[in-house]
Length: 273
Image (cartoon, rainbow, N blue to C red):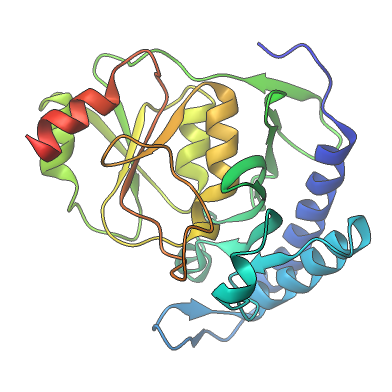
C-alpha cells in the first residue's frame, strides 16, 4: 500500500481531468449530435469540449511540452520522432459508450518519456472516480472530488480469474484466453480504459485486446496498472511502448494484475508454440 502523498503534479493533472469531465457531463446531460470521422469512429461535441479544456490546462503547466491527442491534428512522424517527452491524451475514451449513455467512458492523460508511460491520470466522469499514478510513486484512487486519496494495488490471480472484457468489441480473444487461463474464468464487460483500472484496484485479473487500439487509448491506464503492481504486454510478452513509428496503433496486448505469473512464458507457449 502506498504511504507517500500524491504529488502536486498528479493533483494538477487530476484537476485538469476533472474540469474536462465537467465539460463532458454538461453535454452528456443534453441531446447531442453524433458525427463520424474518416475511420467511421464516432465523435461528439463532448470530445471536442474536453480537448479544449485539457489543451488549455496542459499549456498552462508547460507551454513547450508537445501534446498528442486523439481530437487534434497529429504531428508528423518526422516531428514526433524527435520527441523525448510529451503528453498523450484521449479527451473522451469510449465515445461509443458515451453515445449509449452507459457511463463507461473516461478521460485519459499520460506523460510519455523515452517511449514509456511515466504518469497517468484516468477519470470516469459519471462516477467521479479519478485514478492517478506516476513512476515510482504508486497508484491512487479518489472516489469523488475532494475525497481522500486511496492507494490501490492489484491482487493475486483469482480462482476463477475475472476477465475484464470490451463492451463494444467482440469475443475474438476467447480462444487465447482459454489457452492462457483454461475454461474456468468469469467475464465482466466494461467500456474504455476503465478495464485497466478495474484490474489496478484488485477487482479483475486480466484484459486481453485483440484488434486495433490507438496509443492514447492505453497510455494513461497502463501507468496506473503498472504502478498498482500489474503489467501491459504485447503478445510477445514485451511491455507496451509509445511513439514507436509513424503508425499510432498499438499491437494487440494483454493487461494483467498478477506479475508473479510468467505471462511472457504462457504467451510464448500459446502464441508462438
